[in-house]
Each structure stands twice: as structure tokens, then as C-alpha cells.
Amino acid sequence: MKSKKEKTMQQSSSNKWETIEIDHKIFSRNKIDRMHWALKSKLKNEYRILIGNQMRVNKIKKTNNKCKITIECHLKRLYDYDNVWGGLKQFIDALCNEGFMWDDSSNWLVVDTVKQIKSKEEKIIVKRLEI
Image (cartoon, rainbow, N blue to C red; front, side, top):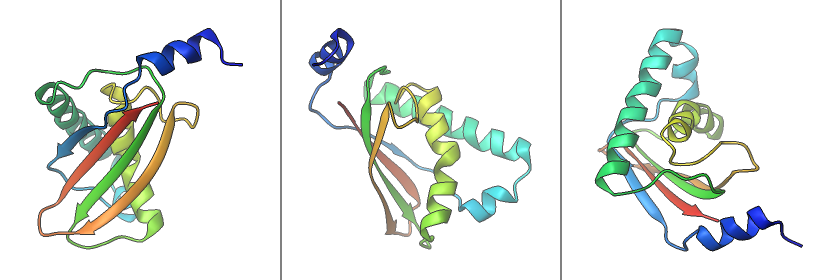
């Protein structure tokens, strides 16, 4: 039996994927681990500004619903699995701070896929579906 909150969340969520495209690179976890804490903070703020801008341009509203996301990382050189996930930490935190998703805990977020694509242009494409 679903609670009142779950029913409201289900009714208010749409079945439409919302997409933002960020012209920035995801750094590997190895690179981020060697960064000074101030540089990590600066990187997260850069992500926040770019995400907020894309949300305004694409008319994507902040959410407080559970979300399913897919992430495509377009990179010049592909990373191993751990380096991708470690490198996405700052980016996912910025997504939460800007309201693209409510929280990055498993109660609020389902990561559908994280895909790497070898490309000359480095960018990040994130798709969100409220569930």
C-alpha cells in the first residue's frame, strides 16, 4: 500500500526525459585525488554554474521527487570504471546543489547508466526522469 506522499510523487512526475548538456570534462578519480581542496571546490562551482545555466535555458525546474538519471561522458580518452565514478562525485554533488535531483542517496536517485563515449569534444550529457 502506497503512502499519500508516494501517490502524490507518482502523480506529479512526468514520463518525459529532461536533458542537459554541459561543455566540460569529467576528470578521472586519480586526477581529482591529487587536486588541492580549493581546486575541487572551484571545479564543483564551475559545474554548478553550467548546470544552472542549462536548466534555465532548457526550462527544467528543480525537483524534490525521486529521479532516474543517465550520464554520458564524452572523453578524449576512456577511463576505467572506478575512475569514472570517482570523477563524477563533484558533478553529481553539483546536480544536487542546483536542484536537478533532490539527493544522491539511493532513496532519491536511481542511476540507470553511466556511459563513456570516445570523442574529440569533451562534454557531459545528463538525462533525468522523475519517478
